[in-house]
Image (cartoon, rainbow, N blue to C red; front, side, top):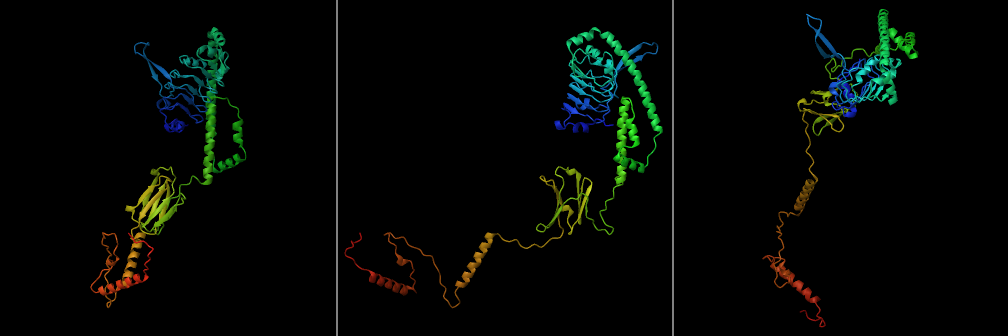
Length: 485
């Protein structure tokens, strides 16, 4: 039996972003549901409800009454109306417009008076024999379509005329439109048709009682002849079913039975039992029912074992520059982080992902207190950083290029200075900057470029005389050239 739960409703509400408080349409077909529940509490905004191909026997919640009598008289003191909480409730869905209950076990139309907006009801291939129960739909003024094809009540004499005359607002019955003339003719002979329908209902109720007694007797006989099958018999049955149906299965499917709610439930139970038997024997044959093997984290001598139950393609990098291990474990991108457990120990790292263990030994001892575990937001991978305990002596870092250039430049300057430095016997020569005094005449006097020291006056005078002699010897006075102004 499958029950309607909040989880089931949210799974079926994917088109509404899994929100059920504002849900207007939901499909719960082919779920083997036997009871309608929670819809009136969690889905008050429902307009369309699909419940076909289930095992639902009743619609809505029944509204009964209790009569209280005094001790002195047999007259009822008061009448108390109550809700039967053991049955389903659909009548609180005030906005429900379409209800599909085809291929279920419904025997009576009831408790839909509260569905004020109900326009269409589909009860195709059910077991509705109480045709007079449609009178409960007279107060549903928006009700337009009704489908009762495949129900026992459709075989009653005067079925269509009775439904047409009873429901004044109905426009379609079993996919056929109702004309005004058809309704007028049906109402003219309504009382006689209703009496005939009631008589046929009583006959059908007697038939149903016999069918119930027959199914109960058959069920008790079946329980007496039930024997326990061994595992080998089950395996042989599976082999036989792979080749073809067994004799017992052939007899079951060829046996003629009445189509009743009990037979339909029995059919579903038989299919479910066979499915469970096949799964059980298959598990036993393949050894799936064996208890899970205990995970060993350490060897007998105390060594840490490497474990990779999830068969992850991990990466362990030894970051020598930062003196730490970096573990990259690929996890699913949308895996919830709460399903991951990380345990870092001095000599190994253990990660548990959804019950599957990953354990890796480390070549060097690490510091668990300084370790960190992070998830990548793009890939979802788990990154575990484990700093080592032993410190590593590192070489000095290379200086930048500019500093290297400056150092090389300084070295070349020192070498030049050493080469150009005078020896002990040589005289020290002091170099001074050249300065040119401003000249008011506009002519530059090159004679003052070299400073005349006391020791070098004679040498400077001799150089000046030589320059003048060279200038006079090379000078030619041309009379045609005008004088400079």
